[in-house]
Image 1 (tube, rainbow, N blue to C red):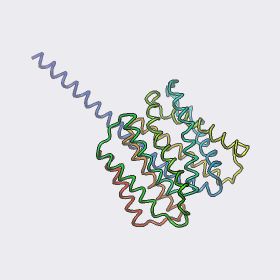
Image 2 (image 1 turned 180 degrees about the vertical axis):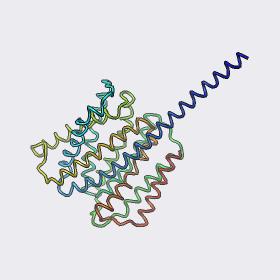
Image 3 (image 1 turned 120 degrees about the horizontal axis):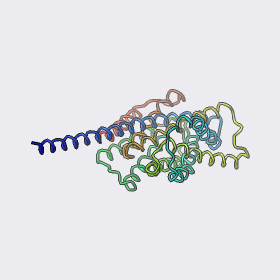
Image 4 (image 1 turned 90 degrees about the horizontal axis):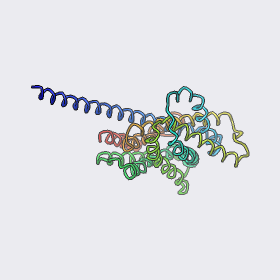
Length: 315
């Protein structure tokens, strides 16, 4: 009798442990999904606000405003945000090295592309980023990629590309060399999440990762601005400075929530969700920029994008 009770106790203990681990995994996946959707929303909105800023400022000057704007805001809030966050010095060189390229180079490429091709094309070709992210995650991090997730990813990307096909005439002509800008931005945006995830395994703090990266990127864009203009801050209209400051905050929040998403879940789940940001750009462009017309092709592309993400989530 006692032996049976011992066995029953062990079975219940194992079952309880399995149930706890399952709940914890579900909570982490839910957090990753929510953070990924938040990142897509912030990113899509920032594409539109940068277009407003580009009406009075050039891309490089805009980058010298947007990146430091979020860095300054983060530094002011850091006593509150970073209270209780441990410091792991081994992770500092990783995040500092990432900051030399991201978000500095990505911001410069995105703003230049936005000016040359417009916000919808910029964000949609940027939607190729999850292809790079997922491929690198599978190869470098050995993350599993289920067939349904792979199909969903491809469908989402196809849908986003279809959205960009119906581009209004006043956005200018396609230029083959200009297309390299959003493609390069997509590559940078794609390879960063797997590298950040490696860094977060050493120092599991998306807050510190974002702050360190933005401090380094601020130094890069300010140095570029100093060399080009002879001063750290461009003498530009107040409206342009305001829109690029707002854009910087939006991009910064997109980065922070993306880092939080990859901290909690696999990149094969997070990257396709973040890739829906062109839908936000499309909606806001229709409302704010008022030069986009919703056509059946755009509707079809939207349906495909949403269906693709649904398959990724189901997988």
